[in-house]
Image (cartoon, rainbow, N blue to C red):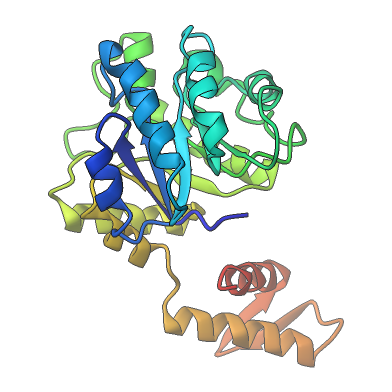
Length: 277
C-alpha cells in the first residue's frame, strides 16, 4: 500500500498546476474533478486529467471523482480509467454500500479513498468499511460539506477548533479507519498562509492516531510531511521498547527509563517502526 502522509489537491482543469505539484514532494496528488471544477468545465477537466495520467508516472495519483449519485461519476470514470490512476477518491461516501458500488466499477489494483463524513447518513456508516474490498487504502473526512448539508452555520468555534458535532465526525472517521485496518487521513487546514497553525493542527492529528493529511496548497506539504514523520528520539524509544521485550520473552510489563511499558506500548512501537519501511 502506498504511503499516504501528505496528499495534495490539484484542480483537474489546471494541468500546469499538476506538473508543478510533482515537485512538491507530496506522497500523492489528488487530481480533482469535483469541488475544484465548475460544472461547465468538467468535460474539459476530464480530458486534462486523462492526458496527465497518460504521462510518465512520477507520483501516486488519485482522482477525486464526483459523487456516485451526481450523474457525473460514470463519465468521470470512463474518461480516467484508461489512464490507470493509482486510486480513486470517493466524495460523499456513505459506508459499505458506496464502497462496494465503486469497487464494482473498477478493475486491476486501483485503490479507493473515501471521504466518509460529508452527509448525515455517512456518519452512521463509519464503522462499516472493513471487509468490503481490498482496494480500501484509508478513510478521510471533511468539515465543510456536512454543516452545509444540515444547515449549520459553521463547523468551527471562533478560535478555529471544531464544534462538538464535527469533533464527533472526526473521531468516528479515525476509529472507523482503524477498525477497517487502514490509515486515517486528517482533513485539510483551510488557511494555507498560517503554517504555524497548520503545524500545530497536523501534530494534533498525529497525536490522535491519524497517519497523514490532505493539503490544499503546495506550501503545506513540507509542514505536513514533517509533522507525520517520527523524530529521532521517538524512533530510538520505539527500538528500545521492542528490544527490551525481545530480551524478556513472556514478560507482561517492564520498566524502561523509569516508566512501565506493556503490550500496548510494544504494539505502538512496532507500528511506528513498521511505518519507516
